[in-house]
Image (cartoon, rainbow, N blue to C red; front, side, top):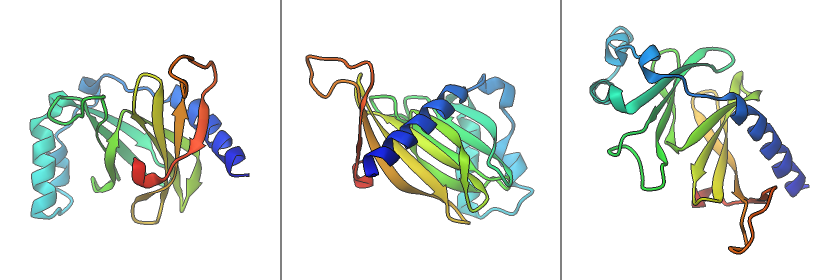
Length: 175
């Protein structure tokens, strides 16, 4: 049953991932802090947003449909924000520019399924040339929480690369 759910999750993710493409960051660049200053953020939130503004050349910003509201996927891609294997700081901001998901990822997908009125989100972390880790996030009503994780491995045996990956459950603490 658990493996069947993981395979179904992987199928949904693969379909959604194929549809999730970053557009040119320059076409979506707006002054994040100028929008946020109209929404009454705390000093800490404003410092974060101003830092994002100062590094816009290192960010991809995509307007996305979260289900009950419009949001923004924001992902860094500069060396200051990313690890050695390409996993970079990633946020989902709601319509009020509040971070409702903050983690790291190489890619993301917005799924057609939803929880508490918001689409479910998948983040994929790169582990190696043939292996990645996938985390499924559900909306709690306030923020996104990781609820299930999987390891997707095209080469569990270093001598063989598979056409279809081996998908296995992964403790989310390993992501």
